[in-house]
Image 1 (cartoon, rainbow, N blue to C red):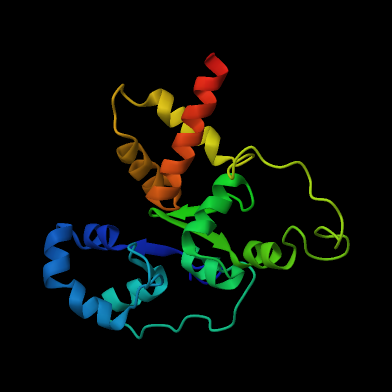
Image 2: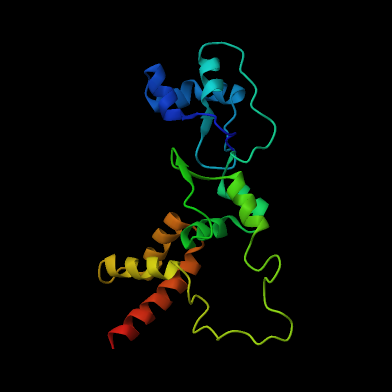
Length: 204
């Protein structure tokens, strides 16, 4: 989590401030630095640090404490958002792709969402509250043609199939989509299969 309004910095920029190569900084200085200034995103591959804490450490000043109270403008990782929503991390990425969440904010490559937005999604999920969901005994709506009917990711899958070189293995395309948009490779393989079938049908 990045507390609201707190500027951040990554290790490459820290090394640049000190005028040393990033590899040198990580080998020589990073271990001691990380002991005193913890990453704001400890469960992420992106190592981001509070700028004020970093500058205090580099100037050999006392390191200021971070805010401890939760605030609606805190920025949360997909893992933190998933814990609040009661879903898995890849589903958070899928929600953002499908429009159930915003695209979020990207800082140094890390994709983040405000606590306010995540809580609003949790408390106002489709089907909750008055009139939400199907009443007992009511007939279900039209049966879907397939499990992914209406899924916004199908558009992404179709575009990926069109853009891919002829003969590119579906597994490779699925792996690239999973890395970019979240969800599992297997899920994207299923989406690509449906998208490929839809494309073939429309051409006949």
